[in-house]
Image 1 (tube, rainbow, N blue to C red):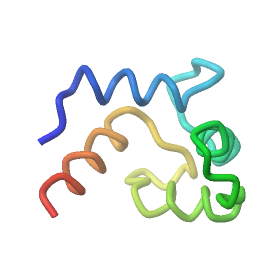
Image 2: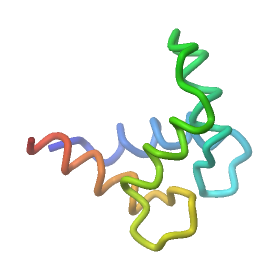
Image 3: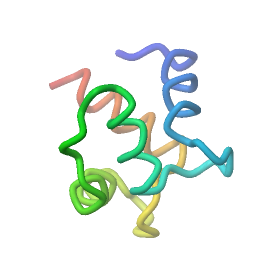
Length: 74
């Protein structure tokens, strides 16, 4: 299980504008900074959509946290 404080810090790195949501553009940008220039905005949106519980096309912290715990259990 992922530590919630670590997850919060990771979420904040993705949430570049600090609005409490991760957009496809923010996801793509951080992935490029981390060395993965192949994540397009379309791919980023698909990743977000896979974990977007409320269907708004964005990830809030609760959705991000749930995705971290789900992948940690797999």
